[in-house]
Image: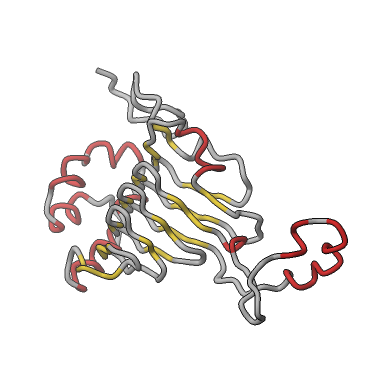
Length: 216
């Protein structure tokens, strides 16, 4: 057994399992930022994440995913490029079809957008969940399988359904504040490695006790 911690720059972290990819070494787009160890699992070419799972990404809005996020098969992020005009009789984007219709491209500029899509750290996305443009998902959240997330998700919130609604929070407000303060996902890798059992199965008290010196 290796004594070295896991490497966040290895594309396929699980030997013999090409369906699992770490996203940080995979993504090439300047419009996508992913933190260490966040991964995507898909038996049908997980390496196509940028084109199959991040849709209508024409910019300039970014997709930002934090560290230690787990993305189940079929998770999709719909970006602002999917927007159509809704203030006239038709929503059809005629200028994109070419020919003389391109003279009217000004009708597609300046469409309203919700800004960057931002995912916190330690977020778990269930199978076939979908995130709509400009949504912000807090740290420690859980997105239920098949959910369509149309609104922001609080830290440590559990959401599900279409549209996704808050089912409950994993902890009370005081405990969430403590977890955010300890921010284990920002611990140095060596220190984190020594305390994995506490991070995965310990109490919040134990997590605070294990925090590096200088943690609030």
